Length: 238
Image (tube, rainbow, N blue to C red; front, side, top):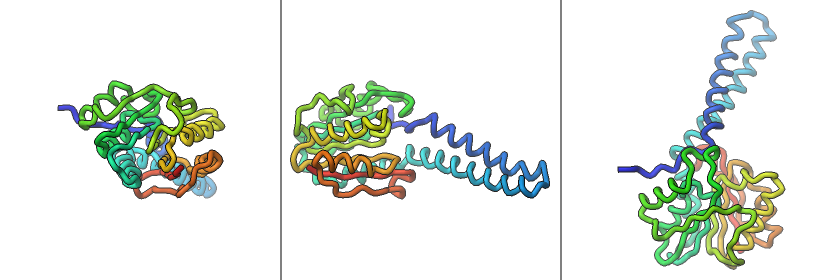
C-alpha cells in the first residue's frame, strides 16, 4: 500500500550544501597535514568553519523535509479557530501538505491548492502526486487543485476564510513581484479572515506588504525549533 509522502524541499540545493560542506571541511583539515605554515593553518580553521556552516544548513533542510515541515504545518493550522465550513486557499501547495492538513478540519468547507509545479522546488513534484496524497489522506472530496500564479489569482475578492503558504513566496522573481502576490492574498482574503505565510527567509517584507494592503499584522517571527531549520511565519488578519 502506498504511503503519504510530501517530498524533500529543494533537493538539489540540499544535496549540494551537504556535499560541498563535507568536502570543504575535509579540505580544511587536510591543509595543516600538507604544510606547517602558520598562516595556512589559520586559514584552514576558517575553511572548516565555512564548510560546517554549509553542511549544517544542508542537514537542517533534510531534517525539515523529514519532520520539520509537518511540525510547521501543525503549528500553522493550530492558529486557526476552525468551524468546519471554511474556504481555504493553499498557495504553492506542492504535494498538498497544507491543503490536505486543512481539509481534515473541514466538514462542509473546501480546501483549494494552487501551484506551478516544479521538481526543482520539491522532489517528485506533480499534480498527480498531489491528488494521490489527497486520496491517501482521505480528503479528496474536500480539496480542489488548480495551476495558478500567486501574482494573478483568478478568485473573486473576499473569497477565502483562511489562506496558507509555506516556502512559496520567495520563489517569485523578480523580488518586486512578491509584493504583488501579497496584495493578491489581501484581495481574496475575507473580512475577519486569517493568512499565515511561512518561509525560510525573514517575513518582514511580506508583513510590510500586507500592512500596505490594509491587513493587520499579528506577528512576524522565527520558528527555528519548530521547523528544525530556518523558518519565519507572518500571521495577518483582515
